Image 1 (cartoon, rainbow, N blue to C red):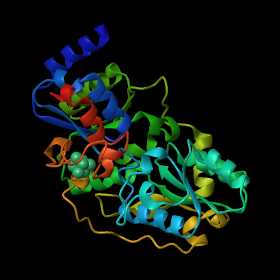
Image 2 (image 1 turned 180 degrees about the horizontal axis):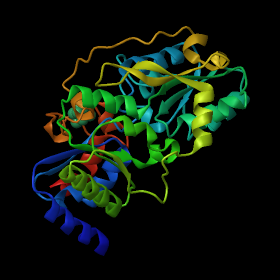
Image 3 (image 1 turned 90 degrees about the vertical axis):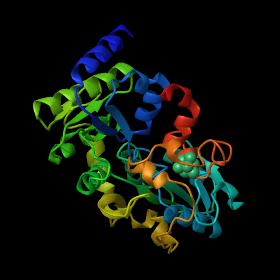
Length: 342
Ligand code: SF4
């Protein structure tokens, strides 16, 4: 931690104005909160969380589509974090259907091989999970297998955030996991300071220091503070696999409107695995009708503790919104580590 202390001191010396940087990664939020990093930052330096939890940004309409699949008699397989995320008429957990928690798409395919019933995998995640799903579909799973693609791409959401300017950001801490897979060349289009950061406290502090230095020198480029895992090109094969199977499509995010080319749909040639087409399931926009402010938290304009339900009606046992359900959700992380936020 001597290195962390040294970087913190440099940060304290470097910050001479109010600065706000956003990260777009639930694992970053967990690392920041677990280590209590906000408590060692100099006054004026703020880390804001963005739409970095793939479960949290899955809109109600897609949860409703997953519930439709349950109603059609499918075995629905998905990650545990998605079970309790509320749709407009309950959650997968409360659906009473055959809903199974799996660790990955390959396990869902195993279920399909062991039954004659239809198995639908609710496929959420950013560029980190989409290549694995693509590689699995390229092996041509059995006919009774399909996926509901809820995948999202990070750069289009960043573009939206920058265009809207709601969160008054000075730069981004880029997601180390996503950049490990797809590199960081797609981020070079954005005219703001950006640094790819790893997940140790020292990695994050170093990323912040590099961001501060960019702002002070008037630069706006992408730097890599996580070279032990990330290259500019990323995992070229993984990226190829992803785009062999998926194509970008306009998609709604929870808390956001439809963001152009921010989702992934199956390409022709893989439509037999598209649960939405196979079962003729519509994905509708659903208006929010609760006091939950996940939408604002995900856009970086509110903190979990700004929500009047935080830690009261809404807690990990009785979550009201997705940010309290998912282990990568800001509200759940803050609830777990809130003592260290101060
Ligand atoms: S505390 Fe609960 S209700 Fe409030 S924003 Fe977070 S998830 Fe939503």
